[in-house]
Image (cartoon, rainbow, N blue to C red; front, side, top):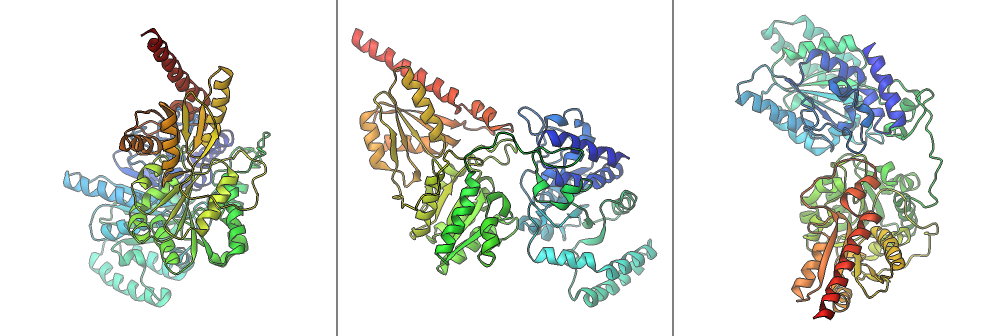
Amino acid sequence: EISKELRQFIIDVISNNPGHLGASLGVVELTVALHFVFNAPEDKIVWDVGHQAYAHKILTGRRERFYTNRKYNGISGFPKMEESIYDAFGTGHSSTSISAALGMAIASGLTGNKTRQHIAVIGDGGMTGGMAFEALNHAGVSKTNLLVILNDNGIAIDENVGGLKEYLTDITTSRTYNKIKDDVWKMMSGMERARRIIQKIQNAVKVTLFRQTNIFEALGFRYFGPIDGHDIPRLVKVLEDLKNIPGPKLLHVITTKGKGLKQAEEQQTKYHAPGLFDPDTGETIESKVKSKFPTYQTVFGETILELASQDERIVGITPAMASGCSLNIMMAKLPQRTFDVGIAEQHAVTFSAGLASQGLIPFCNIYSTFMQRAFDQIIHDVALQKLPVVFCLDRAGLVGEDGATHHGAFDLSYLNLIPNVVISSPSNEEEFRNLMYTAMLYKKSPFFIRYPRGNGVLERWRTPFKLIEVGKGRQVRTGTDIAFITLGPICNVVYEVCSLLETNSYNCALYDMRFLKPIDKELLHEICKQFKYVITVEDGTITGGLGSAVIEFINDNNYITKVKRIGIPPDKFISHGCLSELHKECGFDIDGILKEALNLLRNINKENILKIAR
């Protein structure tokens, strides 16, 4: 009854306040069983990926606030330590739970707490991340009190891929082995010497039935399962038993993503985060206000297919985001030249480098926030070797309701310090398309194109391809008072600001740099010779980004031009909320930019009046 009520509550709330639906519906019974058997928050439960944790949040004191999930100043859509003592660890990204829980388990041992339980619940593709295997390798020899629960639902956002998926399927379907193991282990309960003998027999049985060793037991874990993740009495019994078994253990549970909502079970990718839907019928509700402009994701998907149709050397790579980034468009037409490598960003980058080293043209599409996980691979495997990989950084800048773990705030800063790279950002869909074309033909080094989530600004974007000169910006508006310098789609917002200023008799110039690296020094010389005041605007942290690059240029060339930087504030993580709220908080909505510009222009007027008075 608790599970039924909990599931319906999640459906009712998420139908009107969109969030991650399918994953949380799939773990309702597991969540109830975990909180029944274990004594949280004394016992530590780590959820991975964190969007599985809605039922956990509701059961741990946040039922009344759940309607604020992912809203501005509301609760986070992921576990967050500062939000609740029941959230043992923040898990917005994937494959981190085993490492974190192992650290907690070892810490408990060192501090003398020998009774605390430590549970890592890993699912929704999280086990495909390399970090999970690194943690398993360490944990297996640690002899710590650690329980890993593998929530096996066969899907992340898109269907899981790779050898591990096939292996888990083999385990799941090998009922003979699992029945033998379960029955014999129960029979030998309390007889440790007999169990050691039986363990040897089990290994022989496994070799016969699997033709290989169980990978988890080979790493030092006691493996249990697979069991039905929706059978509460069975879950409770097994979890109670596992509490009393020392050392690292892995429980394999089989769940259905979207359990309890027919459409979510049948269309698991769509209902991962379906937006608004009818809680009674499950049917999604399309927005009445449809944009006439395409999303940048659609432009990427259709453009890469068009380019790949012209050049057979082009291949597409994504770490488990085929539908999110629209690489699935190419995948449907050219499946042999598209690769979903699972939640494995580091591998995706170096795999792309290998492809490029052999003359192929890899377009590696990774969300900006997840590219942070492959920073070392970008430096050592791609940039150092000048391999011409095209990196399309989706979801760059602020992304909205997913919050701090998902904002693409830092890419400009951390990429700008790396030698041998091109960093670009289009101001609209047509420019995005042409940058992809330019990057395809650019053979000198890696080429980064960053772009935001959501719709662009052009209806007619599918124009004939044109080369863009690498490292060249453009003047969008002429002016004499002050100059705006922008990078990326924020240029369109600043254009509106310039139009508003014009109605107040101010004449402001606007420059779209297009490239952060190499930055257009010729254009910057022109700006600095003409203007004493410039405002830089970027959808990224101002530390080390466009504004910093302009200031460095001014300093290195002994100009006296003063710079006002607008962007994501330094030394601050931006929380979740809709984009308009977050842009306003950071000061680069229309009103915020206009306010800064007017303040600067009025100060300039005061300075001029004082000069005249003197």
